[in-house]
Length: 119
Length: 119
DNA sequence: GCCATTACTTACAATTTTGTAGGTACCATA
DNA sequence: TATGGTACCTACAAAATTGTAAGTAATGGC
Image 1: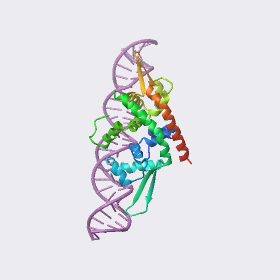
Image 2: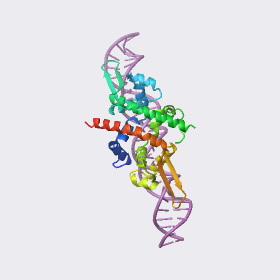
Image 3: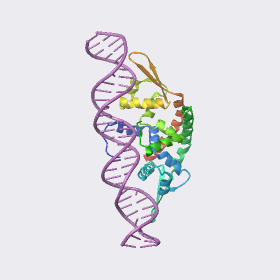
């Protein structure tokens, strides 16, 4: 999130994120791996290393960045246990749980279209 | 969509798009300006220039690219009239119309979270 | 012939996103 | 003293996305 040229369309896009509830929502879940991470955390807490194992194809850096973004967006809760070696657990928030019924609908829409497309 | 290194995580991401209905759906609507364009086309046909006027902040190039993507994804129908100067009209497809109820829910989820966030 | 209009496309440059490789801190155990 | 485990972070590089400016084709009107 570095400084950015004023009035670039990147900035304009951010403005629309702050003005449009829909863009705002899509932005929260539209990241590269966010949905997969959210899916993985559905129903269970997981530690960083456990997530890393599940997503062997995501780099640590990206996993970390995406988790941080999800945390900032209030979709994931991060709990740090003051132990050595460290232990950190990730779990979904209320907000993320409320999202699931909608995502399920979106998913079945996607499935329907996917079938159509493959004909 | 140029050639790409095999087995990069970009490729992996594309694989997940082809395997997960939800990612597939989000991918179709998650582009930079796609939702705004879809919103604008809700209830009416519009010509390229009309869209351009509405989105004075999107460059012609991006508008063109996004429309093309939406067309390929089957969300927008493009009709060309063989006239001079040319006339091209864009409108939503059935598939896009089916999406609206879901997007409305997502939108109100977004609105709710946005309020929470601003407290 | 020259200009205007429409709906684009193209080459090139800037910006953002993602990947790679290495490093950090802490303490327990060998 | 050296090694291992956890949960990261950092600098630098590659790749993808977006922006900028200019150009194209066809034809009607001046």
